[in-house]
Length: 264
Image (cartoon, rainbow, N blue to C red):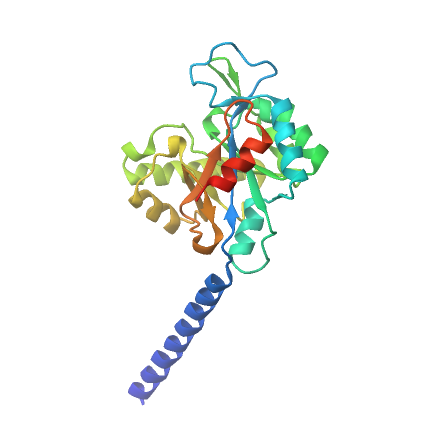
């Protein structure tokens, strides 16, 4: 009798596994060959300085950003949130013909002062990856967001707030356990101020990651991981290895489109 019950349980588990893997396979088959560009911005200034220690790769102007948005909208691009991208990945929704995402790293005050009004003006969604220990501070002349500003943007329904770590260091040089604890701590702070996060996305500072860190964070409940520069393809999209396109100072909308079209 016991042997029969064990056999029935094994058969039941086997059938469940077939169904689960079948659903995963069918969802993957439904994914089209479609580019998913994700743009990366950082800080914003009203006037471009004559010199920049980072060769103008991490600053931009609000006017240039608005031009980017207008040009992309005029050329048929649809701005998505990571939540919407995740739903499309899970087969709950269908991707638009020309999807695109906007992200901002580090959590600068300029994102709120200059960029949030532009997002509201064009009803465009975006995501900000914050360094949680920097919130509410001014460091080396750079002013960062406050939790209140994060809350206002998050409640608008246009801006998602995600983790960019607590301290912004090279996490590929640290033990994986330390990175895991850091990401968990950063999300504890985010959830303390913004409420429970149904979707957790992590962007590696400097794109510095290891295969071990990706594996551990995935097991720890991080839904998506952003790690490198490049283009994503929905057909073979991997939520743990998401790429972005860095937008240097005053890159035009047409230049961005050319970059998208030429990327593999």
